[in-house]
Length: 96
Image 1: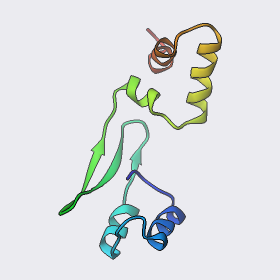
Image 2: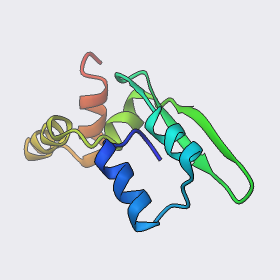
Image 3: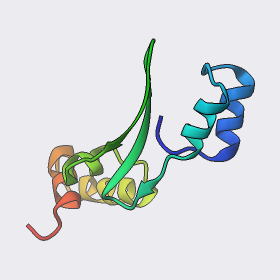
């Protein structure tokens, strides 16, 4: 799980979609994002819970972005005739 809005976390808990005690809820609420450098991630397994950092290269960050601006920029490159992979590359590395 990446950083979530407080109401989303409350919905997780209320709907019991995630087995969440107070400690787990506190961990999930503590998740932060540092711009495009990294996002903290909560990982839950059968016998463990952990916090880690997700660090992506520029291409992967562009590929998996949920930003409307990034999506629009990729779409614009495709409209200019670029293939998807090339469009992503152009947005991820604009100065190449």
